Length: 404
Length: 140
Image 1 (tube, each protein chain N blue to C red):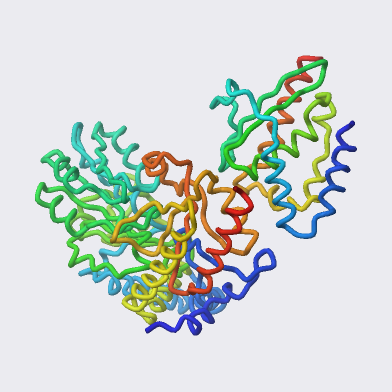
Image 2 (image 1 turned 90 degrees about the vertical axis):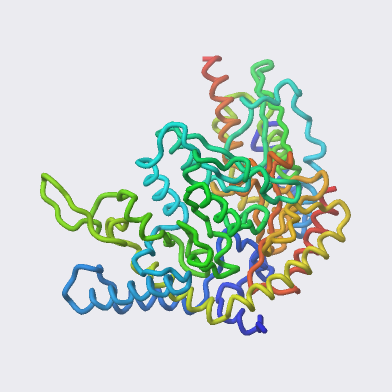
C-alpha cells in the first residue's frame, strides 16, 4: 500500500504554487518530477566528486567511475539484462532509437521492410523514414482501431521474410495504450526480424524484464522515471550490439588509434563516444533506486485507482470525449470537450494551477486518425492524489462554462 | 484614433477586471465577435507558424491604411487576435511598424508573450508588422 502523503514530501516542487494556486502536475507523460534523493545525488556529485571517468588514475576519477558503473549495474538489474555491457548509456530514448537506426543502415537492403505502429511518437517515425531513404527499405505501418489499440491481425499480415525490424512503443504517449509487445516480439522472431521497443512511457509505470520479453533492443529515458533530463539507456542483446557498427566516433569508444586504422573498444564503450552525462547517469541510478523503493506493484495499483477515478469523473461531464479507450492502458487520459479547442481548455486549466499537455503530443498521425487538431492530456504519477483529480475536474467544468 | 490611444483605451478597459477569470471571459467574448476572415483567405499560406492553434491572417491596403482580418480555431487565441486587430488594423503601415507593444504586459497577458508560449502571440505581432513593412515598401 502506497502512502501518497509521505511520498509527496519527497518531491520539493509539489509544494509550490502556480498562478497563485497549489500546483497540480498532470504532465507526467512529458516528464516526471524529481524526488529529493535524485536532486541530492546531483548536488553531491558536483560538490564532492566531479571528475572525468574511465581514464584518470586519481581518486576523484576513480570514485566518479565507480559510481557511474554502479549506476549501469542498477539499470542492468532493473531491466534484468543478462550482461552489464548490454546496457548502453545514451542521452535519452531518441538517441537510443537513432543509434539502432544508424546501425541498421549497414544491414538493410533495398526492398527490406521495417514495421512501425500507427501509435508512434514523431521521434519514432522520422529516424526510420530517414533510414528508408538511405537504404531503399520500405516502412510499413500497423494500423490501430477506434479504441487506440493495434490491430494484431493486420500486423501478422504485414510480417514476411522481408521484415528485418519491428519497432513499437511499449505504451503510447498520446493515448496510454499498453501494446501487446510480448506477442509482437514472438511473431516478429518467427520471421527472423529484430524488435526494438520504445519504453519511454512504460518505464515510469512498470518494470520490464528484457530477458523474459526476449526483446532485441529496449530504450528508455531517465527523465520520465524521476531522473534527470539528458540521460537514458539502450538495452541490446550482446549478439546484436556486436553486429551493429559504432554510431559516433570520438574518445572512449576506441581501443587503438593510428592514422591508418582504429580499432573499437568493447561493449558498452563502443557506443559511448566522448565524455558522457556522468552526473545524469549516476542520478538515473538513484531514480531507479527510488522507484524500486516505492515498488512497481504499488505504483501500478495506485495509478490504476487514479485512472479509474479520473475516467469516471471526467466522463460524467457532458460533451467530454476520451480518446484511447483500451482496457490495457496506463494512467493517461487524452480528451476533448465537444466544440472546444484543446488549447483553450489547457489555458484555463493553467490559470487554475493545473498543468496538462495540449496539442498533438508529437503524434500527428493519431490525431489525424481521430480527425482532431489535438487533445488535452492529463497524465498521472504515483505522487498525484484523488483531490488533485477533483481540481482537474472542477477546472474542466469551469473551462466548459467559460468557453461554451 | 491612433495606435497609442487605442492601446490606452484597452488598458483602461482591462483595469476594471478584478481577476483572471473576468479578463479571460472578456477575451473569450471578444473572440466571439471577431470579424472573420473571408473563407477564401483561410489557406495554408496564410497560417501563422508557431501557434498551437491555427491562426490565419489576411492583410489588405485601403486608402493607404492596412486592414487586417483573421481567424483561429481556438477561442482565446481569437480574443487575442481581436485585441491586436483593434490596435493595428486601419492604421498607416509606418505607424504599425513603429508601434510599441508593451500594452500587452499592462493588460495582464505578459505570459502570452513568452516565445515558448504555444499560442504564438509574438509570431502574430511579427506577422502583422511584416505585412505593414511589405505595404510600406510598396508605398515608397
